[in-house]
Length: 290
Image 1 (cartoon, rainbow, N blue to C red):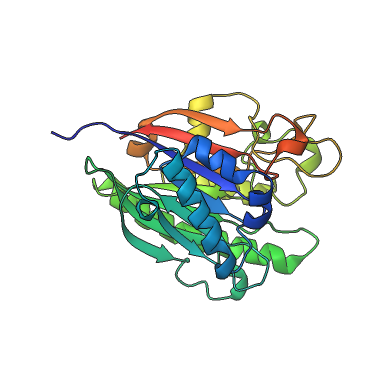
Image 2 (cartoon, helix red, strand yellow):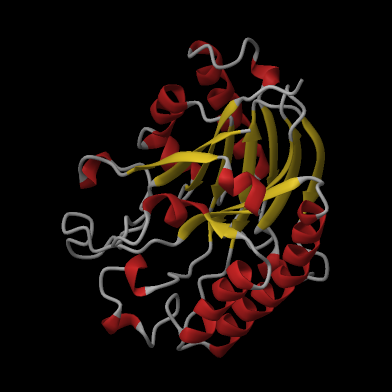
């Protein structure tokens, strides 16, 4: 008989892994120890990522989340454009396969934006977890918007493959990351003032419509929270956006239906004050009973 296990999956844009470490990320890691941790905007070379991941592993051991640092499995891809992007994925559950990047995207600017792990729980439940960092875009720069739409278009093919496998009773999937799109007016404080800006353009929001309707993925946090304003996951560094909670919800977990139905709760770890943040994003953690 297959049992039920509770697992936690976190997605967090680090705004630079080195800066996040300096600002207290390791303390957060020791306190939370998610089973699966998807990171975006790692923004560091491999030789500087490795020792920080090793420190995170030690924090997991000291918190008794794992018995040995080697039990925390690490996957990451560094962006080929220095100082940009970069994604990572940590798991204290067995990783059976790793995949890097979206097939067909070969430009340097598209690297460090998509990695996948196939993970199996001790009870035998199989999931594919992706850590994703979508281009920010800029309406004043057509090249950057073209890069964003090219990435989003390429995503559609991969979503179709994941959805097809899940629908046939195979491996379920969850897409975690900073998608740099607020889906509806409930997902940002000032919707009216941002309808012509990257991140809330109708053309961008239409992609999420397709993910949910055509490809049957579920916006898990919204499904759990219901029809409310926010809660947000990112606040501008400018002005008093954080203090006034004038934020955006751009960090998501999109899951195939079976996995989404197993979601039992979520937490957005918004820091208690501006000066205690270790990133301009807050970590989003969802608990699943699988």
